[in-house]
Amino acid sequence: MSTGMDYSYVFQALRKLWINVNSPTFSVIESGRFLVQVSSEEELREVMYRKWVVGGRLLITSRWKPGTESRLNEKESIPLWIRLPQLPVLFRNSYSFKAIARGMGASFIRADECTMHRDKLGSARVCMDVPLDFRP
Image (tube, rainbow, N blue to C red):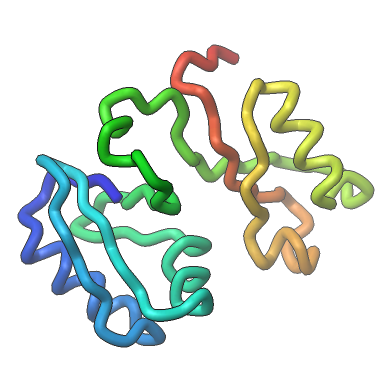
């Protein structure tokens, strides 16, 4: 996760927001970046697959992998929530979202609940890992 705010404020705010996460552990990596450890896959899903805003700033989450610390400044992509207005219902599925992502040189991460359940037909919202050098 990355932010430019005081860590104690961010950690306290996240503890309040994460009502379904028991005792998350926070570790500062460097300025603006920190790790969060949770106890279960269910808690991990709770943290990873929702949008979190603290102090008016959107926090970016990504799953830790071995060697992540050494690659933090070499990040080539970023997960972004993208709104696809008036996307036909026929194309609101993982296969189509993956195809759209490939066309951008990105990878599909997930769609929000309203998109997957087709609750809001005006637009679709999907999270994609978009290369930093992407130009529309």
